[in-house]
Image 1 (spheres, each protein chain N blue to C red):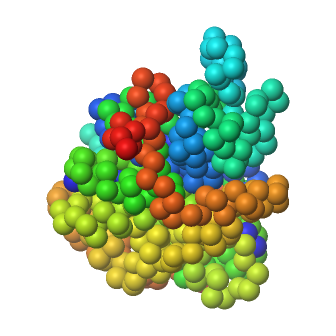
Image 2 (image 1 turned 180 degrees about the vertical axis):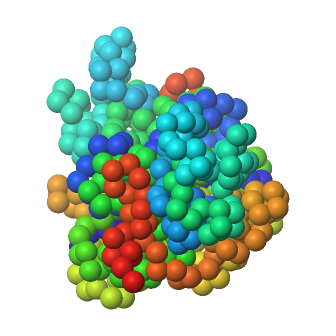
Length: 245
Length: 245
C-alpha cells in the first residue's frame, strides 16, 4: 500500500485522479457538514465548484426536497437555505433531502477529484472509520487536503497525517511519499489536542472572530461517528456498507 | 516580523511577490549550484524559466564569457556546457563568467518571484548567513520552496523550517503563518542529520540512482559558506555586503 498526501488541490489536475482511490479532507468545515448531513438522514450531497452551478442545479430539482447550503469566505451565501455550519444540518432540516453544497475550498476539492475510482470524505470525526475502511480496501490511495484559498491548511494536513499514522500502527508494508511522511510527523509533533490545533489555525481564528466557536468544538470531536461519505455519480452518499444496520 | 512559507510555487502567482522580501530554496540542487558558482567567482547567474529562453539569452552574449548550465529532470541538457551538479562549478570553470541557468524547479521558482523587492537564494549551506541577514533586515518575508515537479519537497520545507526556527531563537516578536509553523515543527521532528534527510527524500533517491551521491553530501553541509545570492535586474549576484572583504 502506498499513501500520498496532496497539500493543495492546486498541486494536481483533475486527470491525476483517474482510477485512483482518494480521501478529501476539509476539517473546517465542509467535511463536517457532509458527514453530519448524511448522519442526520440527508439523501445525498451534490458538491459543486461554483455558486452559479449550485443555483442552476437546484433549479432543476423538486423544490421541497432540495436545499442549497454552503459558504463563500466563511459567510452564508444570499439565497441559500443553509450556511456551512454543521450545527445547522440537523435531522429536522436535512432528513430525506438533497443538499446542493458549495464551499470555498472543500467542495471544490471534491469536484477536482471526481475522476477517482473511489472517493471518500474524511475529518477527525470519522477518522477511525476511514482508517479501518482503507485497511480493508487495501489499495494505494491519495489524501487530498482542501487547503484554504490556494494555501496550506495545517488542520487538514494534521488530519491527513493522523490517518497515515493510524494506518502505520495497523499495517506493516506501507510506502509513504515525502508529503505523507511529513504529514505524519506533523501530526505527532502537534500532539493530541485537536481543539487547540483548530483554534490556533489561521482558519480557526477567522471562524472564532465570526462567532463559530461551537463549530470548531463540533469539528474537533475525534471518532464521533462511523459515517463514511462516498462520492459516486456526482453525488455523495453514505458508503453502501454504512447503510446496513 | 511575519514569516510565511510557500510550499510550492503553484500556490501563488507572480504578482503575489510584488514589493515583498523573498527567500527561494531549492536544496537539491539549484540553490547549491548558485551559491557555489558565486563563491567560485562567477560574475552572475541568469535564472531562466525555459530551456528555449536559456539558449536565446546565451546567443546574445559574448561567447567565451557565458556558460549554459542546468538540468531537466536530473539530466544535463544537450548543448549545455554544464549540468546541475554544484561540483562542476569550480573556480577554474566559472570565474568571471555569466551563467545562464535553467533547472526543472529552482530557477523557475526564482523567476516566479522576480517582482520581489528583495530576493535571496538559500540552502543549508548558507543558512546561518541568511538568518543573520534576515534579522538585520527586520522585514516580513516569504520563503518559497521550489518543490519538485508541482509537488511537495520535504528537503526544501525542512530547510525553510530550520531558517524559521533559528530566527525564533534570536528574535522575540515573530509572527508565523500555519505553513511557517508546520515547517518549523517538521524541521525539529526530523532532527539534525541533514544528509540522512536528503538521502531519504524522494528527490535524493532519484539523485542516488543517477550517481549523484557526492552532490547530496555537498548539499548537506550546514553553514559551509557565508555567500548570499541576491537577485536584482534579472540576474543573481553576491549580495553587495558579501562583496566586501
